[in-house]
Image 1 (cartoon, rainbow, N blue to C red):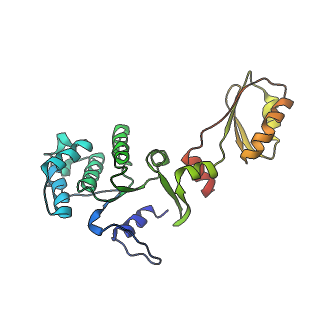
Image 2: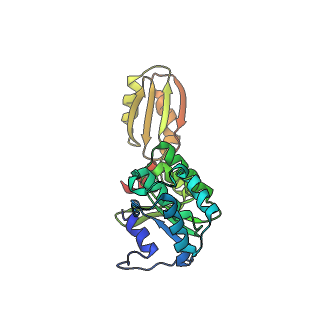
Image 3: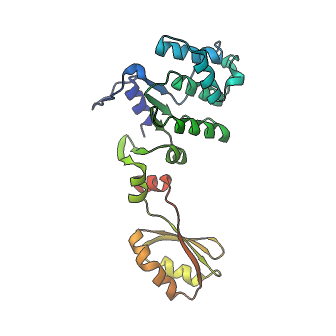
Length: 255
């Protein structure tokens, strides 16, 4: 898609082949966490974070270093040399170096991709806690993470922006929610009748008597689903629109 390349251009590590951009933040107030951070293996974790702080501010602050090591789950590994760190620990250390100087713009490239579920949870909580203190440009293919922490989103496909704006506009305006229909008992006739409708992409019986319907439009589903079910010899227990996810909206845009 070009996510990593875009972040490197914004950080000044690559020059764009065309176009231009403006960032209303001084260069020293920007930080970038690449998707695979690397550090000198002979340095200790504390020394890496201290060096990052000094390079950004020309100062040191032991209290701030301790705070960041604690936030990223590295307090117990602070005196270990990073040459023995796992990929997940290197990711945590990279995040610590990216935030320690409290920059105004923090660019994170797949910050949770190498972490276990607990580590991902800690990273997402840390990103969410930055709201109001810094602008975070968060790049990820894990769309549930993006949906959880981002206010605005941009969808990239082969280097082109397909959507850019508030997350709620994408969820409400782009994706068509699937519909779960629960019947009192399995009914082959109802499934066959639904599959004949041109406004339905497909019908799947996910459990006995529980149908998942993929409509082509919300308007058609609202107007025609109940009348169609009324024609089938079945008893309907419930009709429930599923919550639209960012993944649904992404697939709607890119396929």
